[in-house]
Length: 336
Image (cartoon, rainbow, N blue to C red; front, side, top):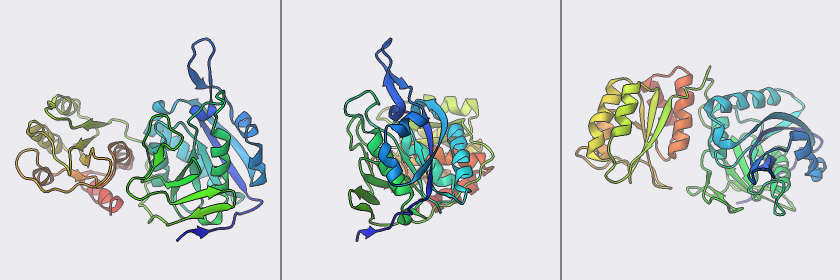
């Protein structure tokens, strides 16, 4: 069932710009697109914004999203949280590069209370391209941020007139306008000329309040015949945590069994997810490297999360001071 909700007319939206393609133009000297459009100019490129809300802008930075780590995500969340505490602010929109948009959106989902809307958006074409989609996406994001039905839905990603829950959305195509999708669940809503429409409401996530982000967390992907060299190196470096993208329902090469056991014995949390685009960890198989064997070793079940999102959650959980068993319980809540 699709639910129509009324916009909160006359309310204020705080737009926080962080760079990305939506803020980029081609540098004539190099031929490469780089962030060059400041917050005020970006808003000026979307004049219909003012038909839907009063807007304020914060120029957080001119970053390329592949350079945004969990420490920067924590800072973005701090700026957004400050804005949300203002009674005049109906919601927040964060503009962001699309490469790691899903990770920052998920971090905001874990770090902010989810009562007022927090909407992340961007563009697939830069501001100098005739097909620049930034103004349309930004306008759609502002429309969602002032919509009464967007409250208490957690962080959202708005792209290509679709609304996605941050925890489920992923970038599916390198260049297509319709790149963002939620393969497990579908979009939570959509935007059209008549209004903002919601189909369903995600359950609340447990929240984190970390003093810092643990950036020394690493993602390793299982591939057929791959040696355990990377796992041995991570153990030797005494990293903060490890996420493994396993094959199928959560299986790895038998060569990985002993290094994983050693990481766990060294009190380094190891989170196991699947490299499959959909589905969750299902510990069925025994023997070295089998999912059931890995669970007995003490890996943390990452459920249906992707490797990058599991890494965000582990980074922020470690930064909150959690130990392995507390992290295990936290992931169990996340992946219900």
